Image 1 (cartoon, one colour):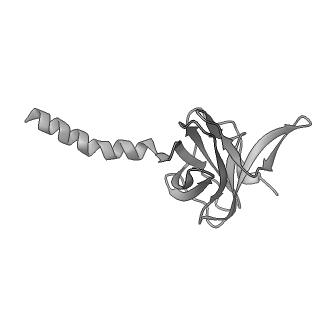
Image 2 (cartoon, rainbow, N blue to C red; image 1 turned 90 degrees about the vertical axis):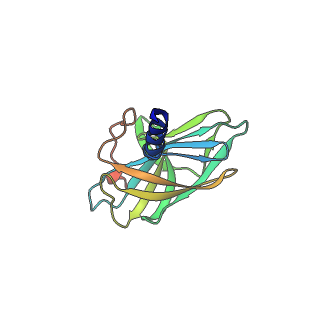
Image 3 (cartoon, rainbow, N blue to C red; image 1 turned 180 degrees about the horizontal axis):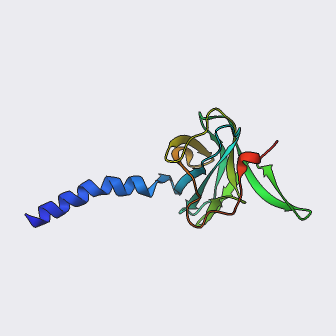
Length: 162
């Protein structure tokens, strides 16, 4: 009887753990914790971050992103140019075989332009990532007041201008 109760408890707990894990798989790719920082309601932009792990023996490429919450989603990176940090759009991002690419503040990120309505802390919104080999993957982006541990590099994309 105790074993049955333990197994029942684990069975009931497992979906909660999976929801909190906030991870997605597509072919050989594994996407960890998509998140976005809560922005002021009037901000026209936002950014989405995550980590892509490639467990395969061949590289893949992230080609594009889209979401119904913004007029446009672009792949961006931060680069040092002439002693100044600047943002620029990139056409794709290579995910190396057996490697990972972090989309994080001050690095690669998905820039959301013409945001229709800013999401609040605790809400989620869909983001579709399109890969060359793994195809389309829809993830839920968790909106948070603060960056997850290890992800905050002191940037705020609300002031991003084009």
